Length: 426
Image (tube, rainbow, N blue to C red; front, side, top):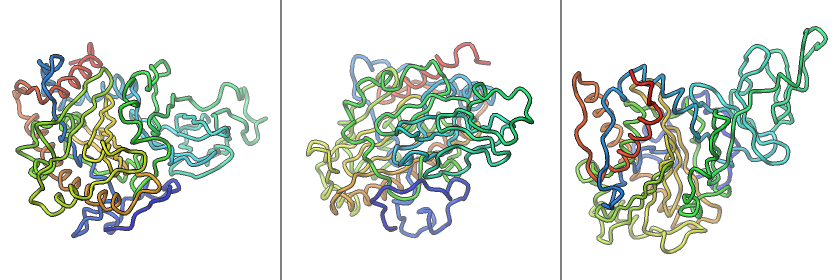
């Protein structure tokens, strides 16, 4: 296992354009050092739905073409990703004024920066002169944003304040040539951006979620390991459409068949789900019966909550999906936040990061290591499952069958996708 990073790390500069070395990637180790890179589907699919009047009819699944049609994938960029709140980092990735990083959102790069008063700003990562990328890797500080090509310089809030030999530039109108603004919001301590200037605030969309899980999260979380949510190039890529990956996370119907470890560890019959308009929240208690697997059994025995949590949180795992593609796992011993970013109609990158709190005791740190180790096993199982599903969905003439009530969240997600793409279907 790799050593842990218990203190806030400075923005990770190298990983954004440098693939992880084998010794840094737990997939290349005989005994994975799980702290180094998140098992993003780690406990995906461990969430199932308890019957309730609202969920009596889960609704239909998406038609197969939603997972295979390149034209629909292109429409999703415009009608889903460009109009929704996208997680890009945690506030700890922007530790002080001038800290900045770039993240991919709807096939664009967005530059997120902490400005002088400590608040956040976001801009398209494009110089207004000739389109040069302004930031290519995280930077921990700086008083301005300066284009590396011709030196056009912007305030942290995006205003153009200087251009070399400005008198040689006819019609240079600095007030009109600021960086293109992007909506930004901090929620649960995570930084989200939205290309839609008229979007409803995320906190308003997700009313009730902060009250339910806010005690797990917040700006005081610190990262564990090197992986970061904004590091798309260093992320695992799964061989499936992004919606297949999200579908998988949204249901536990497959757990008894596909995840024997989770069936030993979690009380499958007691899973619950709460479906809201913009998010779904799941809860799954641990079994009282000791697992036959040593790692799972030890985890059950030593599970201990982080500072800020209560004894009631000690034996419950919670998960949230914020539409369309933000996925956050809330464990007693850590938080895992990740996202599903399509890189092709049949490929999805799943960048993410682990977080904990300062002052976490030895018992909780050990539980976290065991938990993430278990998560990597589940991640590998899910990566194979979603690849199999993608292959099957591509079979000519195939259409999905009816959903189980345990897949009610899949039906919720399908309904949201259909509504967003209404009128643009082929």
